[in-house]
Amino acid sequence: MTQLAVTVIGPDRPGIIADVTEALVGTGVNLEDSTMTLLRGHFAMMIVCSGPFEEVKSALEPLRGELVITVRTMGPEHEHAPIGPSYLLSVHGADRPGIVAAVTRMIAAAGGTITDLATRLSGELYVLTAEVELPVTAELEMLDRALEITAEELGVGVSLRPAESDDL
Amino acid sequence: MSVAHLNQTLASWSPAQLGVTGDVLEVVRAPHPVLATEGATVDPLDPVMVALAADLVATMRVSPGCVGLAAPQVGIAAQMFALDVTGHPKTRTCHGVFVLCNAVVVEASRQEKGREGCMSVPDFTGDVKRATRLTVTGVLPGTTDHVTISTDAFEARALQHEIDHCNGHLFLDRVAGAHAVYPRKVYK
Image 1 (cartoon, rainbow over the protein chains, first blue to last red):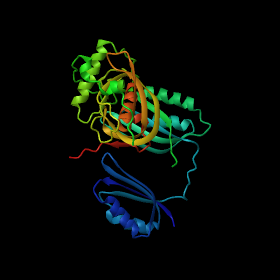
Image 2 (image 1 turned 45 degrees about the vertical axis):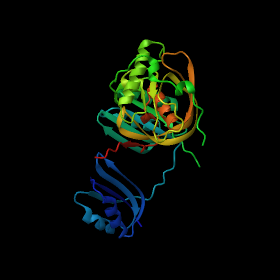
Image 3 (image 1 turned 135 degrees about the horizontal axis):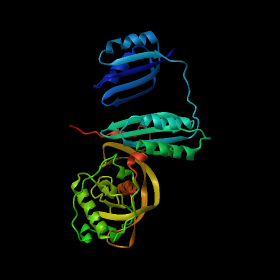
Image 4 (image 1 turned 90 degrees about the vertical axis):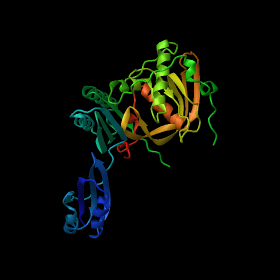
């Protein structure tokens, strides 16, 4: 069974998820990981699932129109092996172009990888939150300093804190 | 469940003790830089600071749903905030209305996640882990005596939120995950 990536984007209305997943059920697809949110009011969903490509494509065909739907085959499943401990990155400040690019470049330069990210804009305020894995060899102090300098240049605030998880 | 022992000095404090009537000030919103500035230590006897204490209470009083207001939120980078969690459904221990200067956390335990909003970040809420058992020391405006407040639940959360403001931090700096900031939902 091929692993497929399905994306659905369009104007939000009640029932989109029900419509999409009902169509998929009919093809024998098994939903695996998915995420859905509203991005400035637009419905946006990504699904990775296993199923027959052609059937999935044609099952979703009737939903196309206002919704932009893509179906692609993916390579073999790629298990993400953590490269090191997790941190939470938080950036907020006055909106301007380049905040995400500059901050994420600093993370990449330190060998870090972003495993989850969300940004929101409201009025003048831009907010970025991300979960970041850093290699154990990463120079945390240098990264903190680099982020601080970048943040200062951008006129935003930045914080990088260890992500706590409590085992119960 | 037991309720933390009330500090009677704080619990019986009233804004009338300031001897001045406060003005309602404008509340600033992020990304205003004052909200990211560490507040200066204040002289609690300074008449300007006593007046600011009255202003914070007055501004908090006219703001619907507001349980706390810190000096940076009215544009002044100073270590002072007003608090009053009276009547909030999540409140257990309650010291009523009070203003503290130069407050610091001395003990914090039993972290729990809760969703917070802020008058200075009106369009978002966020999940933040905060201690639910808390001890804080500070000085009442117009006095020189250090008071110690031990509290829990919502009063503890509100105190930590306000002390963060005094240090130039917003709840956005402490959210519990990449997807822990939410657009504020307003029903029409």
